[in-house]
Length: 190
Figure (spheres, helix red, strand yellow):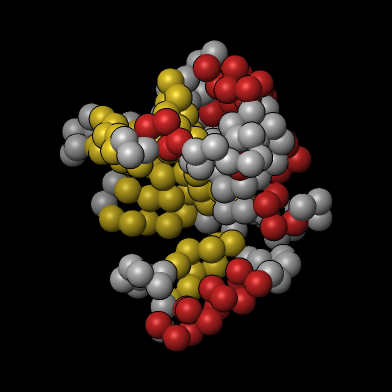
């Protein structure tokens, strides 16, 4: 937000204060950026045929375990036959709550999954991956990170049904979709 022109920010309700959140609020106030607070069940229309379904968090089911990560914003962008789920830093406990909230629906099925928590072993459970059924999984992860992300077992689970792109190996990843809904992926290898 300090380097980009930002008109509006969409965030979930914050259930715990942090230094980063205080810094965020300072930038928002200083730059007069509009903040839209959302939660599960809401829909945000971007333009004709493009919208976000807010899947998580749910203020009636706040997860107290690792409160910042597990109440991350999880949303699904939909455009014609294309959809992508963004999972933030949720862990298994949040995945289970989301699965419970959308059981017996196809709401979680998506073309692309932005893998939770950099491919950490705490996320991307078999049950969650079966519900999403992504053709493509994107993992945002730093090269040679000290956390050992992404986890080998997580990669193995994802590889069973999805093609994986990783920022540490593939560089910046751009997803493009034309007006007919055809998709392609560009990689900017560092």
